[in-house]
Amino acid sequence: MATPRFAADVMLGRLATWLRLIGQDTAYGSHLSGATLLRIARKEQRVVLTRDHRLARRADVPLLFIDSDTFREQIRQVVAAYQIDPFTSLLTRCARCNVAIEEISRDEAARRVPPYVAETADRFMRCPRCRRIYWPGTHMERIRNELHRILS
Ligand SMILES: [Zn+2]
Image (cartoon, rainbow, N blue to C red; front, top):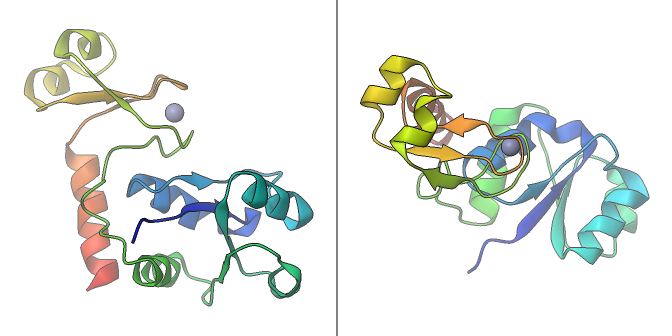
């Protein structure tokens, strides 16, 4: 089963960020609620994620009603519902922009990261939109550990 693309309701910001961190294409923004959220989901063929009961009732697009208020429960629900392996696509998408990040060379990264990181990280990725640099390191380890806690 291919994982769908998502459109997260404005109230689900933390969930949206985490879905992006695990590589899931997730539309999110301060404008995305109510009818606008449904319209974007229809246009871009995304599954709506919401805690809005009224919206869920009138939605004419695929939708997952999120049961919990806490982001850990929310992640658990989405991962289970769509059988997502959260570890295979870690570090493939910008958490801020939702676009795929691109591998760049150590030389390119060196100007933008601390010297220690430039020397020791295995590889580097850059968001083509916001130019943020990502690398496997302590931050990714924290994310991985948190995922293990959430999903165990
Ligand atoms: Zn970005």
